[in-house]
View 1 (cartoon, rainbow, N blue to C red):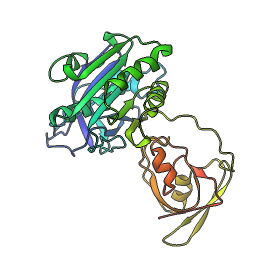
View 2 (view 1 turned 30 degrees about the horizontal axis):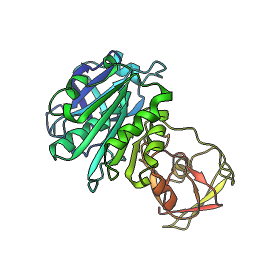
View 3 (view 1 turned 60 degrees about the vertical axis):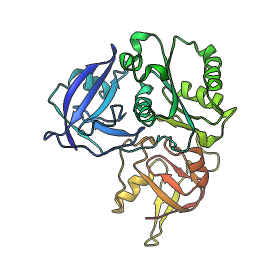
Length: 318
């Protein structure tokens, strides 16, 4: 979609929110809390950003972008170049971080810019009068995006701010937050990888894997597979029986494109889920951050932009 920047708001010194609309003001495709969109900035760099506006705002998509000190032109361009009225290319919403409707309570843990998908969840949970608490970890109040919104009604009673928690204290704080909720509460987290790792570690002590949900926006480094995961392998296409060779160092999606089979991609880092396809046979070497542990264990789908094979052949439902 080609959307117009309708509003720019500086939420903190380095976080800016953008409301994007159609030129004709028509409604945009609906989305569920936790969804994100691809946004292509002025430099042609595509990044994924969580939708964090009120869900009843059917004519606008709101995202928040933190200006990264080591920006390669993505966040810096959105801060420095984009103005009200400028057109941006935006993908349709996708959701790998949805609320579990069956959960009796929801505990939301965000750090820094990771609060954005949790804000959309808070809008929905409040509207549906569901039990929830949003724990927001941030260096100081001036670094907290949407602080004015979260400190006032209707969210004030549901939000807990945690300022300047040192890494050595983090597990203590997280455990206390988890114990304040019920054992049946589902846990959702987004933020820097070390923060999310700490949340998952603490939550896993009292909860099943299915009750812990997280969102990645950076690819985590993966160790090479011990069982030949870095070597060449074959991919068989179930519809035609055709077998193609996947050489060392070249993604499945690129080889298939050479064969005329184009799979949609977006992030090319295994975090957005666009290129996931069904897997019928073989053992994949999962290297993505979009499939859950349960989904990976099922071995019935594969992220074709980064993942490889532990077995000599993978049979894809293509």
